[in-house]
Image (cartoon, rainbow, N blue to C red; front, side, top):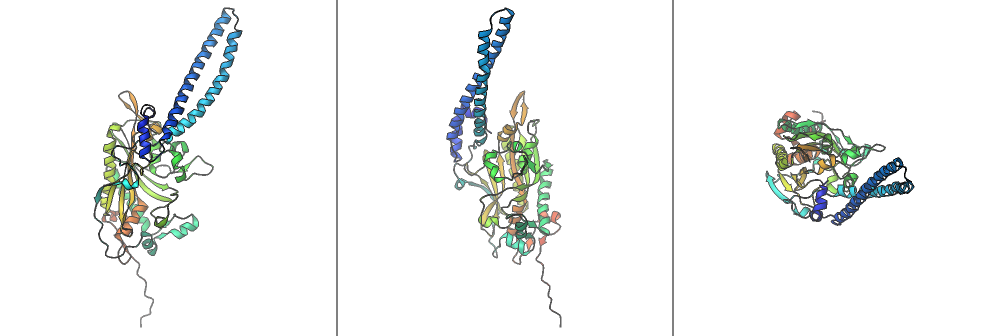
Length: 429
């Protein structure tokens, strides 16, 4: 969440932020009104408690001196009832105040274009899409023809947008994972495999839960949610801690991710591009505020390096204020080229969240005797199912086989996925 001082002292900046994001700016005024009442009530309660203590001292003193204490006692008896009423009112105001405060998104950076998705800006393109020598098929059609993917059986035993990976596709999936983990480990990132479930309170430390609850899976009868990304679990790893961030703390998390993807439709529901379960290697950084933008460039460049190694055309997009999530101040997406769609599609996302998550999770550091909140950053290194869809789309051959990028050969153990030749059952004469 944002600094409450910003809400109290510079509300116009927050109102402007809400407008840039296409969200309700009047919520700021509601917060200020409730916060003012809440503070007034707290002051009244504090004064009443002080008065109660003073009356208690007066009663004791009067008794010692043999004076009549009836009037003082009558006055003191009225205080608990009034205190109870005020404390109930404070609690009511506090709950609504916290709801609003935690739901207000981070303030977009000045470099972020204002508007909706149409204002997204292409920062740089890597590689050029080549004109296809044949008509590229959708990745799902290629994989099912090779008997490497079965979404129908998965739909029968689970639900739509689940899948069975088979044969060489399983090897390719783990090859991509190991390729990303090896690169990040060499760069000093600590590898981490987090819990696949988090408690509601812990999850709320990473995201405004009210806005995301419909996107994630809740475990019936348990205070647990399946994670939608390793980001949230890694953020939680240092909750309520005071960190030493003289050097940034960098993690590379590997986990399955579970998302409802409600409302998705059309071509994206076919195959393994937009699914309810997938694997992802996630970069996550804890650092000082003054080092955050340097770390942003670092983790974005790591993804660019990984994508270059996979030899696909891709581009980096700066998201607009209305198209990025609530938590970051700035997000760059990395989009890969899909020849069958003649379009770039999102494969990764890099975000600077400043102190938004750290404030919610109480993650701090000692800055020359002053306790401050760290900054957090996250970036998808590789979401493997989407990357496989992109690789199949780009490296499919006219006969239906699939070439494997050289960077993955040592992990797959093969250089291409071949089409099995049909056996000729005709008897030789």
